[in-house]
Structures are given as C-alpha cells and as structure tokens.
Image (cartoon, rainbow, N blue to C red; front, top):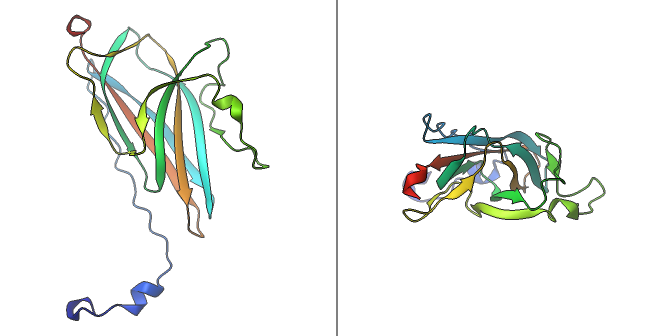
Length: 173
C-alpha cells in the first residue's frame, strides 16, 4: 500500500486512459477582448495530430491586443496563432485541416502563407506585451489557429483549445 511505501502492483497494471477535461477560459468581458476556440477533435491511438482552422476574429472595430491567454487539453505539443501574408489565398473558414494527408504526406501549403502572431509550446499560458505595445487587429481578421497533439495510448483522445485576446484602448498604444 502507499502508506507503507510499497508499490501498488494493481496501479502499475492499470492501463485505463485518463485524460483530464479542459476547464474553458472565461470569455473576456465586453470591451476588454474576445475569445476564439478550436472545438474538440479526435486524436487517434498511437498517433500525433496537428490541425489548423481558419477563423475570423469577432471584433467589429479595430482592436489593440496586448495580452493573449491560452488553454488546451493535455498531450499538446503547441498552440500557435497565425495571420496570413496573402489575404487572397485563404483556406476555407471554420474547416479543420490536418497537416498530414491520409497517406502521411505533409500538406506544406498550410505553412506557406503564415505570419506568426503568438503562441508556443505551453498551451496553458498567459503572456502580455509591454505597456503601450499591442497587436493591431482589424475587424474580422482571418487567423489560422494551429494545435498539435500526441497520443501514446491505445485509446482515442481529444484535442481542444481556447484563446483569449485581451485589448487595450487605442490611446494607450
């Protein structure tokens, strides 16, 4: 038993999969920012899955973002937010796209039109720009949300991500 310092063989033999559920981020209050999300998707057993989804920002006026907060499921490698170099060559909105084609080949076209905006290897992070600095986001800006998950189990796991963009008034930038 754990009380006497011995190892629990039944615990070691337990192969059940445990994936904690995600606690969603609270949506920023009106006038303080906006939220974007990657809805739940499956990660096949013994596989890794890297997905992209283009979404347009929900702001109706120019926004000045100085803080980005992210939350994701366990087993994630990264979460990145990209804008696009060429707005005439955008992927379909709200369609989940896989980096890898069914035959295993990488869809390089997903990477050709990106400009890094924010993110990193810790999908549960919160970062702020220095005072007076902000990312200028036009209304309905198309962004590509990119999540990468791995699954070393024999069961299907889920991926899901939330991204909060917090804004500051233009006169403070």
